Image (cartoon, rainbow, N blue to C red; front, side):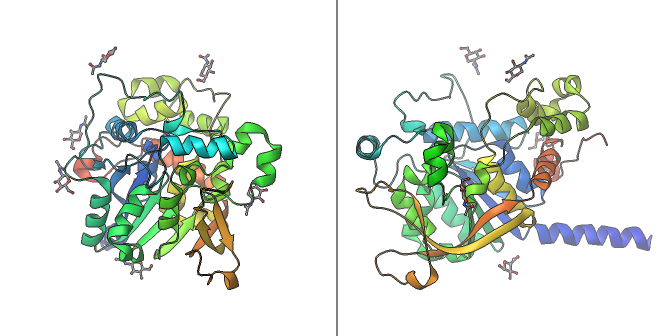
Length: 369
Ligand SMILES: *[C@@H]1O[C@H](CO)[C@@H](O)[C@H](O)[C@H]1NC(C)=O
Ligand SMILES: *[C@@H]1O[C@H](CO)[C@@H](O)[C@H](O)[C@H]1NC(C)=O
Ligand SMILES: *[C@@H]1O[C@H](CO)[C@@H](O)[C@H](O)[C@H]1NC(C)=O
Ligand SMILES: *[C@@H]1O[C@H](CO)[C@@H](O)[C@H](O)[C@H]1NC(C)=O
Ligand SMILES: *[C@@H]1O[C@H](CO)[C@@H](O)[C@H](O)[C@H]1NC(C)=O
Ligand SMILES: *[C@@H]1O[C@H](CO)[C@@H](O)[C@H](O)[C@H]1NC(C)=O
């Protein structure tokens, strides 16, 4: 009796400890894993905020709503629509810059052939009471917990919030996807896809917001950088997901396995895959222990339109950071993660029954051992 009682106490205090860190997911391409990884690590996700980038902001909002609906998570993870355009750039100047300095491989929502992925008749739920920047400020102001923002899109919502409340940054740990450095050799020798992998699209589509956000005085700033372009889905990961889910037929016939089904499809890894960009950022935020290599650097973002590096992250030796011409902030730059542990986190997060999480706070694993 004493034994199980102390176990229960231990479990309780673990939950209390875990809930002291709460998450906001700010993204142009919200996917289920960005929410499920922190939830599976015992963190609370207060909401998803959306912005322009790969998609227009309405489409990002739709993607967020769909990702949550699959797991019946709509009622406890609200979605707030954010900035629809960058601070300074517009469609014309975005393309004018490329006329001057060269095409960005991936053009996102401002690509000349972009089409919204939202079906004409789509209905989806998001909270329309306030916009994302206001909600982010209110949430941080009212939270007694430590807030972590995982920002994997443009930094526009954060820049807008910081303009109104600059010291917001001091209360927040910010983890971003992107912030590539040392990619020039790879970009010129690797072809279009490798060039794309090391293009900081999220920063380039709103360089001014990126500089406002990344040079702010965050409680902690983590730049996931290069490593997220190097971790891809693998057939081994698919095989593991399929095995612990009880096979492809079980996946197809079990509603609680719909996140697995969306991930593995027919079970064969597609021949073309994108890296786990945003998911790596989310996993590092959810469990910093998967980081196996990092260093610290002072960073800023180039905001000179008349520069071929407009929107690129720059790093400074410590003794140059006091320069008056540019505000910098100290960041932890990630160079390696435990990929095996990362894949285990994905399997753990996907192979769960999330359908009662909103009512019970629990999502039991449905993995077959
Ligand atoms: C939306 O339209 C498509 C075909 O155009 C149809 O298959 C689908 O059922 C419709 N969805 C809703 C929610 O009406
Ligand atoms: C929408 O968000 C506002 C601001 O956070 C909150 O007060 C309200 O309860 C939310 N509405 C719903 C239906 O959840
Ligand atoms: C927030 O994080 C700091 C360290 O960064 C820690 O000292 C503090 O106890 C944390 N607060 C809560 C409520 O967990
Ligand atoms: C970033 O990635 C490029 C291309 O793979 C590599 O050459 C470079 O060493 C990496 N830099 C860091 C700091 O990880
Ligand atoms: C399975 O899906 C992959 C990726 O979507 C596709 O390339 C492949 O042709 C499919 N295979 C079968 C047997 O349907
Ligand atoms: C979905 O979640 C709600 C609570 O938000 C719960 O009442 C309902 O039973 C759940 N639906 C399913 C199919 O589990």
